[in-house]
Length: 89
View 1 (cartoon, rainbow, N blue to C red):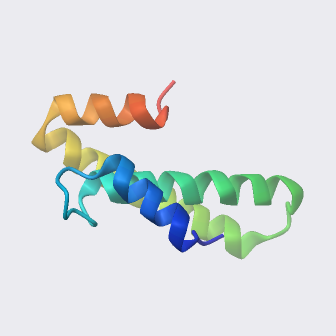
View 2: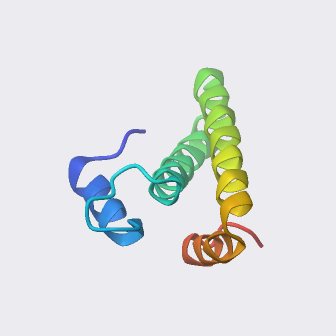
């Protein structure tokens, strides 16, 4: 469940902090969120795909750590990111 080049570029343009930013925590969280949603829909139809389930859990953990980092640096950036991606509740 990888992302295409165009889809990655759209995510980078939407969530970048400055014009040359391609790897900030916000961009990484956005990419992980998109991959998580794609993989979740895959697993709904393929319930016995245990290796993909393990990868999904790893991605969720990575996103959680990145969100914790963003929150420790700036509460405002964290809340804006959560609202933009519609992750929490």
